[in-house]
Figure 1 (cartoon, rainbow, N blue to C red):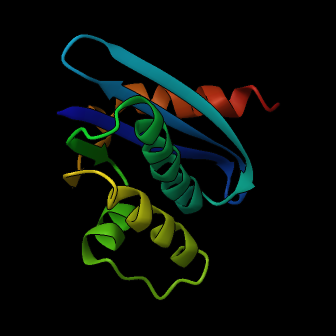
Figure 2 (figure 1 turned 60 degrees about the vertical axis):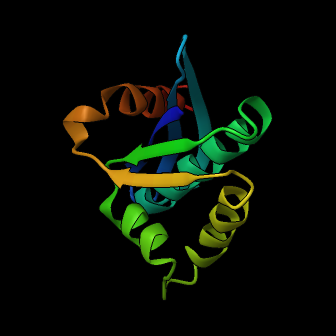
Length: 130
């Protein structure tokens, strides 16, 4: 099983944004810090999950994925498989499509204090754009 921690951050809302992705498998950890340009914090949270799934498709095909995020909005939207927000709908569809490729995909909300690595990476991505 692959553990994937994601976080999106914005400097302003909207503002310069970044995604942080921290992945653990049985042997090692992987870190990704991805600049996202200007968007809202909530959009950055969704993009972090989308990008993490794309990385997992390349690096960990056929694995069981256990995602963790400190974004209640993103986790609730994915768990309920529903949003009225037109900005989030295409992102939810991307997540749905990518997650369906894996044998199992789980997502769980975690408190911010348990998501420090992904948060650090998301903030680093913002700094690279300044």
